[in-house]
Image (cartoon, rainbow, N blue to C red):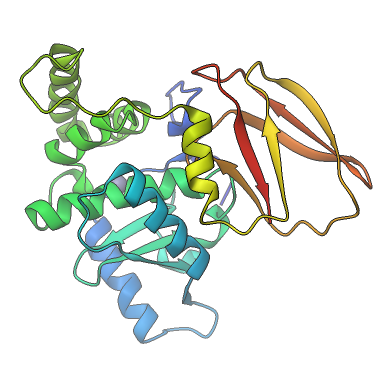
Length: 270
Ligand SMILES: [Zn+2]
């Protein structure tokens, strides 16, 4: 599966949405199949396995973005056989499980996928099964727009034409309510990117933490000889960092775009 298979679609996003892949219209059935395969593996190489780190990441994201989620799903990683083409994440309501495609696990992608699937989990827990537009119901659209995941919501409204009115309605409600004068509960002012990154950092075990300055551009960091097994961009779901590469045995270069709110973000080296 290519890194960004949805690039092939005639949609121009420069946002995280291009990395959040559409669900199939039969996502729920496929997720059930995926779960069945998890229990009764059909082939030796097809497998799903519980991922403690992703489950912990999902809990942290849920705590910050969707505190009303009653039970945070466990997260498993699965081999490609469990997913239809172009699908990197599935939520299975009955088992309260999120399945992430093996090749989608990475610092730049999993947070986006987890937010998307956690939104499905919250809507499932609030409204029950949503057999509409692959689960991308008006309630899901409203939640995603409220969370600021507008490009992801718009992308799925383009994949599922029946989901478009729900997306447009959610956008209209957001516009009408801004600045939260529509009678609803005023939300707490969102934390800065840096404050959110520091909050997310608390649950992680980082060997080193890199501060990505707000102005963006390329920054080189000197590191002692370090074994880096994982890179996690903080806050979860942010997409400032364009590339990370070793420039020498003890130097790492991070290229980032400017911060949205003028505060720094972080990279956890695990
Ligand atoms: Zn979805």
